[in-house]
Amino acid sequence: MATQADITALSFEEALKELEKIVSRLESGEAALQEAIDLYERGDQLRRQCAARLDAAQARIEAIRTDADGRAGGTTPFAAG
Image (tube, rainbow, N blue to C red; front, side, top):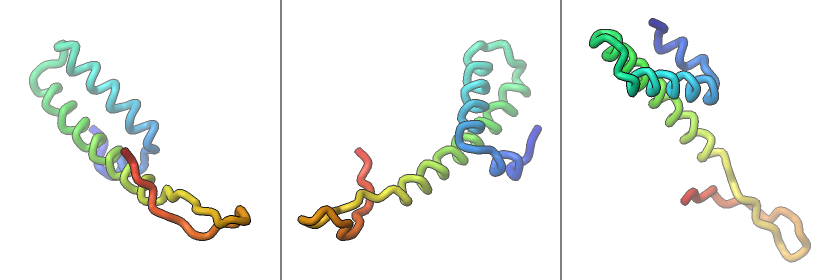
């Protein structure tokens, strides 16, 4: 099984795709107990990596405020929700 360093090297999209495959495999019920445990642990690591990448992306997204002349007057933090 791959290490945490391998997971960190994955893009968000790659990690999400792998996580979806793991969920599908676990939901199928075809994995033996030890395989299911290993898949669950890998899935949890991937989930945490995806969440961290989303948090970092959200922190970088800013809405641009403009003044009356249409010039950027500053930024405000992105508010999700």
